[in-house]
Image (cartoon, one colour):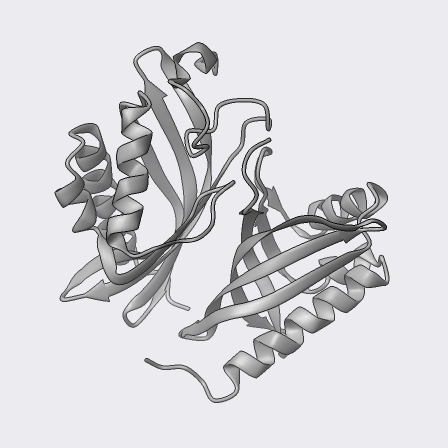
Amino acid sequence: MIQATSVFEEIEAAHRAFERAFERRDMGALADLYSADPRAFPSHHEVLAGTPTITAFWRAVTARGVTSCSIRATEVASSGDTAYDVGRYTMLCDDGVVDRGTFLNVWKRERGRWKLHREFWNSSLPEDRADPGAPHRSAPTHEATGR
Amino acid sequence: MTRAPGLEGEIAAANAAFAAAFERQDATALAHLYTEGGCLLPAHRDALEGRPAIEAFWRELMESGMRRLQLELVEVDSIGESAYEVGRYTLEDERGTADEGKVLVIWKREGGQWRLHRAIWNTRRPAS
C-alpha cells in the first residue's frame, strides 16, 4: 500500500468540489463526483444504488434545511485506480452544526479523476440527535444544538 | 480490475471466522481478527482505534445480549495488497433478529492472513 501525497490532495480536492456543489445545491455538479456505478450507505436506509438515487438523497437533505457540509480526509490509501479514505464530516444549517460524524469511502479513478464509488458514513452524535439522512425528520433547525 | 484469484473466498472465510468468534462470545479473538492499527467507525459514537478499544466495543455489545452476528458478502475487490468488501449483517439476540444493515470493510493482509483494517456499518431499519 502506497500512501501517495498526491492522491491525498486529489481526493481532498474532490471533497472541496462536493462541498461547493452541496452548498450551491447543484445536483449536476454533485453527480459528476460519482463513479459510473456508485453506492451510498446512509444510516436508517437501504443501500442507494446509482447516481440519480444518491443525488436525490442529497437533494432531500438540502431541502430539509442543511445548507453546507465540511468533509476532511484524515487518511488516504491507494493502489492503481482504487483508493479509500477515512475522515470526518460536519453538516450545518443556518443555526449551526446539525450533524457530525465519520466516513469511509472507496474511490475509483475514472478518466483521470477520482470518483466516489462507495460512500459510507455515520453520525457520531447520540441516536436521538440530528440525523439528516432520516426521512421522517422535519427541518433540523430545532436540533441544531451541537455546540 | 486486479481481483486476486480466490479473494472472494478468502474474505468469506475471514467473515466466517468473525461470525464464529462472535458466536463463542470471544471478544479477545474478535479483536485479533483486526490489524494492529485497526479502526472501527460505529454510529453514534466516536471512532475506535486499536485492539483494546475494539475488544471492549464487542464485549460491550455481547454483554448487551447479542448472541450471533451473521455476515453476508455482497462485493469484494482488491486495492493492491488490501481489499474492500461490501456486505450485509444480521445481529441476533436470544429472541431473534435485533438489527440488520450494511457494512463496508477495508481488509489488509497482516501476519499472513486477511484482517479487518477499517470497518463501518449502519442499520437499514428506519429510525424509530
